[in-house]
Image (cartoon, rainbow, N blue to C red):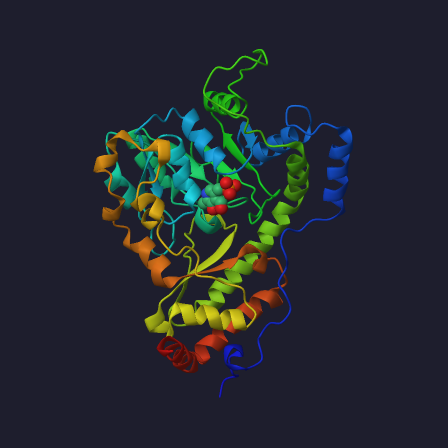
Length: 417
Ligand SMILES: Cc1ncc(COP(=O)(O)O)c(C=O)c1O
């Protein structure tokens, strides 16, 4: 008889907490204090953001990096710099965070939702190709969960149709394909340093590119439309103050020192967890393409096929949580099903073509299936501990599987109440 589920009164697999996030220490304290005492708190006055931009650009083999206030604004600035105009169409995945789409709307353009590949959970190039129209001007692949998207195929489509490609690398700090860093594979890339991200300063974002003209445009847009050698009160394009601050820069310089070893650890633990739990019926961890040289595991994602596993996702999540394993089902809706898109509540950004635009007719079955019933997320900090931590996670999955009949009975009773 297998050990009783914690949900049903048994002993949980895990009572100790996992590694907490963020991780910081003396280095951050010293650098923040130094920044405080310098009195140079703004990006244009101090050395920290400039240093971080240089280091982050170099890490990606890129010539330019522009630090901004968050990873939503960075996407919008990249779109504006690319010359996206009112009513231009921008193809994005339907399985992503709001920002990938809201940045498009705020750039006065129209988000067009493509489906994802059901195994890799990344943008499906065939779905993208089918959506290209003469109005399509850009494409935003998301390296979802930290696994690089199929950039070779997507860049080929972009080249054929003359599209600008902006990588949304909000999850992908340190990830790579064929040893080329995610973020260096398109025309521009956007990163987020928001609290949950693998590289964080609380709130922050950044754009990298190798294109001098695009970089200059991003720099101007994030700095009130100023130009190099222009006067302080000289403004050339519609823009704002989106500059990343020096305290954030100081923290990011310390966090960047930690990133390489943390990324190696997450990738090692993520791969070992994936190979172990994939042995269970109905468990399909995010499929790693053969050219993925590093997954940054911002999320450890899997598909749970209830019929094969023997219990529904909602019950499995409850059981895992009771075993001491924090987890969730992730997004509850494909992005285009969110009320914002169904009602086109775009405020002043409603496109002229809006009458023809009907997001209720969009068909992204793979994304819908993940949201509705199959996807399960574990957050990146769970992969930052010793091997024993990932073993606990795997043992919890195994225990839930072994007890699937009792779990089903409990769940049926719960629904009947
Ligand atoms: C895929 C994706 N893109 C963009 C963002 C936006 O980043 P920020 O929160 O820094 O604006 C996020 C944040 O969660 C994200 O998950």
